[in-house]
Amino acid sequence: MNTEQFIACLRTCVGENGVISDRSQVLPYFEDWWGRCKGDALCVVRPRSTAEVSQVVALCHRHAVPIYVQGGNTSVCAGSVPPHASMGIVLNMSLMSRVIDVSVEDGAMTVEAGCVLATVQEAAAAAGMLFPLSLGAEGSCQIGGNIATNAGGTAVLRYGNMRDLVLGLEVVLPDGRVWNGLRTLRKDNTGYDLRALFIGSEGTLGVVTAATLRLFPHQPEMITAFMSHPTLEATLAVAQMLRAQFGGTLTALELISRSELQLVLKHVPHVSCPLDGEAPWFLLVDIACGADRDALLAEFEARLATGIEDGLIEDVVIPANMAQREALWAIRHSVTEANKTEGMGFSHDVAVPLRALHAFIEETGQAVRTTFPQAQIVIVGHLGDGNLHYNVMFEKSVWAGIADQAGMKKRVNRLVYDQAMRFKGSFSAEHGIGALHVPEMAAYKDDLELQMMEAVKAAFDPTNIMNPGRVLPRVMRETSGSAA
Image: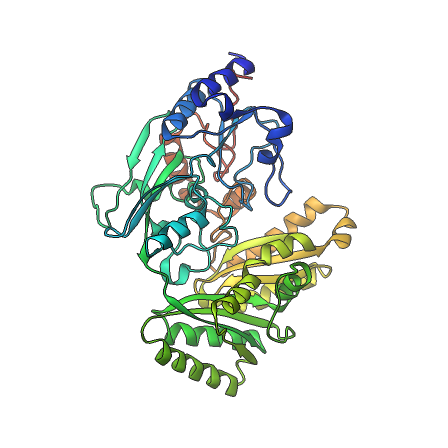
């Protein structure tokens, strides 16, 4: 079967309008959000139902044609675009965007994989419930991609990451069979947890087509504070105090460096800062409250006053209304846009144990400044779980003058990741592996761990058609099919 015949078979599966093969129309699907990773494929397929996904996957399985599953294409690890010279297809899930069911009694909702995260949040709110996952890309990222990457976000401290928020899945397996594991049960101790296996698998084991998500009681009222600190030690001390005193209600604990704040203020017009931006470190805090808001606020303000008296906090602002709160959170949610505009930034999604945060930031910063004096260190992170987005930025004109850009990238990445691993951390906390971090999997993962992962991959996808070249370093072969 040649390429034209294969594409005709795909149209039979999903309809004439379900396949995009015109070169002028497919290009947005072949480039990542950053504009740094570009690839190619035979076509883009946009199914409208699980049955259509099943037919497409079964067809690709028969002809050994690779499948690159794509949601909102907001990955920062090149996980959702095909590689160069690919003879596979992009399976874009955006047309499967229904909210299937919302059950207040079960505290659960079932949605299709292409449902945008913001739509999921809104559907939960309309039922008087809360779906707590919150990301800067929530207006465009899709729930299937959130599941595939085990997304984290700003509310992990209280609600957990995506693995904690999924009750059940529907998955099309690599041969086209459909596993219906959509359940609302909190307890189902009947064998291996297949649901957990697919969460974080980045499309390498199958295609998530629908999910049952865990809901919580309606969005609690928040006490929010934005504060500045004179030193890193002071910042971490205040963070520890907040975790100790408000642990059950502390929802967000976000660290922002002055360098990051300055980039946001420089590049994002609608954002402003109510505090003096000259302090080296800032914390953005959310504490959930109920009927006891006045008492909790009084206790919170007393703790902050003590922090100011002890020299741990320079200044603090507590918003008086929702508009002011949203303005503060706009700072946090604008960091990716600001960094993209500034220049070439190497974003490192690392995690280290909380007790090692100070040493990691100080020692890694010293090493970066010594080795790459032309770079700027820009940090934003989740202090509640030790996840730092440690960015090494090069202003555009500086980056243009670097002759060996590929070599520079490797050296920067190796330095930061070596430091994270030295402190018993991880080189990927919430963004996943994709294609960009496969070398780190080979460099840092225990060989036995890789062997176990490879065994799982071989059991589900022995012909390696599902997102080949992603996640696993020793399963890099892209299987080219007869369709080409």
